[in-house]
Length: 427
Image 1 (cartoon, helix red, strand yellow):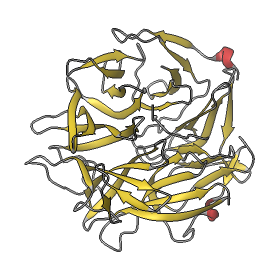
Image 2: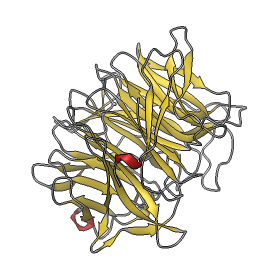
Image 3: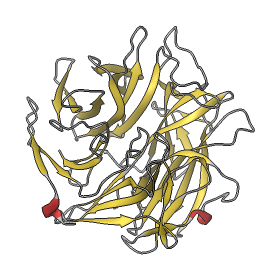
């Protein structure tokens, strides 16, 4: 069974730097960070992306898709840092024919997402901001990805943003992406499937569409039953830095049916009229298009995990009424409704957040805006609060991604933009 970005229960190694970070009051072993031996580009930062993939149980592999410096300061190349089961690193360039794929920087948009299918082939979507398909796939197991954009549906007409990937239990790959078709007065979210047995892509659903709104993908996670959990936000059409109405829906590939968290069937594409709203709008909250962050309450970034029973667990950044900072919030579906808790709100946070389910409890990962230590993990303390633990002491981490691997270990992807370093971690 192949599990991609599932979080349920969700030069060589000698050149790498090892750092131990001891969690305080968590009862867990030390987390270990390894400096990836390749320089990243300053554009290697996003909140929506899925740049990390893991594989294997007895021999663990990790694949970290990243932007490396391009031919000029305002460009980047697309790469995969591969860590094999013995801890040895190698770099896999993502190729555009005979040259490495290179694109203009566009922070928050032009970052890579990766998945590994059931046959061991890499799938990479990179540098798409209202762009035509930029899709790369390896033709052999673990091979160098080559440009296969022409294999995608609507190759000559499609344009999109925010590609998020995951691998299903049977080895298929699923892609959630926002369409850039503005002719309808909204930007919908589309779901595509790589049929691994047939080696082909198809569009399987329009997940969400609402007049006057744009769909912002957040995360995709499969559960043990083979259902796909989908998390996304909405903005005013055509776009906005501040989003609202954090939304959840479950998709069953075997029937093509969409469900709410309570198990009721809903028609697709879902809209604000029928979807599960995880975080409702505050009285003063309002949809405002373009123009950067307009201030006021709203959402920026969210991630998803599921527990062993397939129940959704969500972390997100929400700016409350009267606050200038985005707090870190946690939501779980309980007793017919969404239960929200504040994980952290003492200082400003960045868009880098993630979440895993350990088999019995949740771990929330987030990044502070400043300070000597910026990357943290939070766990419930049993008294209604959360215990905060630094996971990268002394490192100015600004972005992160986390995946729980098949051995039940949280694999960390930590980005230090200041020093252009990428860290691999085990927690």
